[in-house]
Image (cartoon, rainbow, N blue to C red; front, side, top):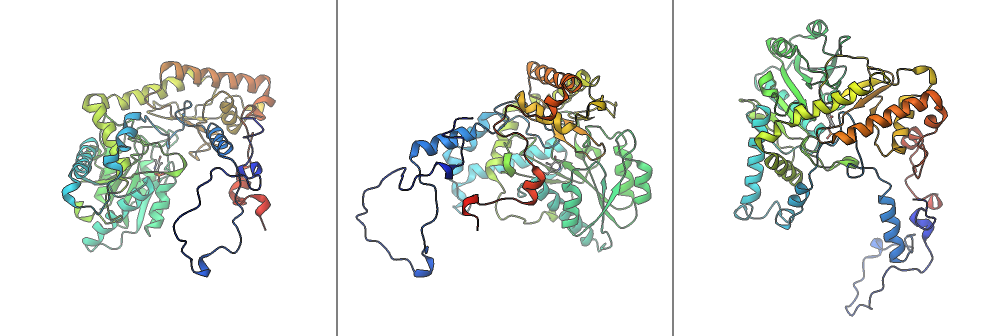
Length: 463
Ligand SMILES: *Cc1c(COP(=O)(O)O)cnc(C)c1O
C-alpha cells in the first residue's frame, strides 16, 4: 500500500484537535478520582478523524500474509486446514458468552463437547484419556513431562533426571525438559536423518526419565526403528513421550499409542485447525496411556482454551471417521509431489521417502551466492509465504517445506513454477533475488537488530 495518506504510522496522521466522534455533554454527575489515579498531563495520543483511522488500519491489515491470502508452506509449525465453519461455531453466542463459574446445569452442552473431544482425541492417538488444560504445545510438553516425573516419583524412583531428545527435535522439547528441572541429553541422527540407535544405547541408563520423539520426525522421515527404540527405553524404565504438534501425516495411518508411546501432546492450533498467527490462541492437550491418568495435573483451573477445543471438535466431526483417514496420505502426497518436481534444482540432502514435509539444503548450484534467505524473500514477491528456513539445524541452508493436505494441484504447481523461476533467476540475474522482496511495502528488515534493540515506543516520544 503506497498511498501517502494511509501508509504512515498513525501518529504521523495526527492533527491537534481532530476527533473521531463527539458525544453530548454527560447529564450524570462526575465522580472525582483520587489524585494518585489521575494523569498529570494528557496522554500523547494521535488525534484523527474516524475515516482516517479506519482506512489506516484496514489498509495495513492487507499487508499481512496469512493462509487466507495465499499458500503458506511453512514446515513443522504450519497452519493446516482451517475450515470457516469452525470459526462460525466457536463464534456462536451460546458458546462465547459462557462463564466458567456459571451453574453446571446450564453448561451441559459445553461439558459434553469437552468430553467428546477427549474421547475422539484418545481414539485418534490410541491413548486412554486426555487433559485439555494446557494452552500451547510447549505447555503440553511441560505438562507431559510433569506427569512423567510424578509417575517416577510415585514409585519412589527419584534418580531419573535425564530426558533424551534427538538432535533434529523442535526447540521446545529440550526447553520444556529444562523448565521441568530435567537434564537434556541429545541423541544423534544418522546420515539418513533418523535416530542413531547405537548412540541412543550409549546414552540410556537408569537415570533416564523419558525420551521425547516425533514420528515422522522433524525432517519428515518415519522412524522405522520406533518399536526397537520404545523397547530399549522401556527396558531401562524410561517412558516414551510423543510430540504430536503436527499429527497430520499420521491421521488415518497409525497411532502413537500403538507405537508404544506413553504420553502424547497435540497442537490443536496446528493439526486441528485453529489459526494461530502471532502466538495464539493455542491448545496443547496431553494424552496418556492407561494407568497414568491419575497424574494429570491442575495446570489451569478450567477447561483450557475452550473455543480452540470447539474448533478442533468441529473439524474432526465434520471430516468424520472416513475423511480424516485421507489427511495423512494427502499431506504426504502433496509434499512428495513438490519434492519430486524441485529436486533437480534444489539440493535434497536426504533422498529417502518422506511424509508431510521435507528439507532442501538451499539451491543445488551454490556458485551464484544466492542463499535460502534470498529465495525465501523472493517468494514474497510472487505471493507465497516462505517455507521454514534455517531449521532444522542439521543443514546450513535448510528450507523445510510443508504444503499441507488441502492445497489444490494448481496451487502446488504454481508454487513449483515460482521456485523454479527463482532458481533460474539465481543463475541468470542473482541481484534480483538478493535484493528481494521488490514488491512488498517494506523490503528486508534487520531481524537481528529488531530482536536485540526493539523500539517499543513511537520515536518522537522517546526520551
Ligand atoms: C509448534 C511445535 C511445538 C510447540 O508448540 P507451541 O504451541 O508453539 O508451543 C512443539 N513441537 C513441534 C514439533 C512443533 O511443531
